[in-house]
Image (cartoon, rainbow, N blue to C red; front, side, top):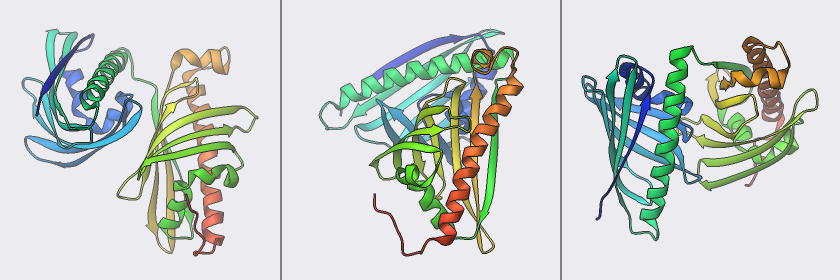
Length: 317
């Protein structure tokens, strides 16, 4: 089995410790790296951790499990895939954060990989590693440098609703997003594809309360826990990040259903989009209101459907 090697390097105007901390916090990677849709720590010990990642590669959503080992003194993080996704047969590498001076650092990202026997496997991996490594390092640089200048405009908020139905009923309503144009008045059009079970690509055209129409696209993952997480790949002009989570917690005779959002607002876009004199606080309230309204509308319709629908009624995708 042949093994191939790549290396990508970038300089960042931030202390090495700050950069290393950003790389260490893997559950924050969906905020940091455009390709990463979701990340979980499966288990950890004194030397490192096992993680599971869901990330896009060549416009396809892939998932794999890796072992990460930390050398905090040298600011190295080594990784090796434990369970890979075709066409990858094996993948390992290292993040190395080097000190240039007190305010600057250099990041070296290396990969060693072996393709499986599928046609075009090496070329597919080579393109994915090149694209994702370049995007990740550029995003790491911009995110950490912005954080050094001032805290980024990233906020998280949630809306919840109690529904008198079991979790699986509400989850079915959220999972069947292909029916949302029929079930939700603020959704004008929808396209849902599921290339792999539990990996969904969702395109939505929605209408705001003032009549504005927005088209978004997201990758969604149905987790083993039953929660559904997503990350938008096509965003409205005010946001550089929008990811979320639908969760369904048993609560007495029903379910507490929650829609959580994490967004990053593009500060330079606030006045051009919202108007002269509008501030970041205004933009945060605008986004909070718009997304919260849609989330609660979705949950209200899920409640009506789940509480009134015959339990024998199921949709067929």
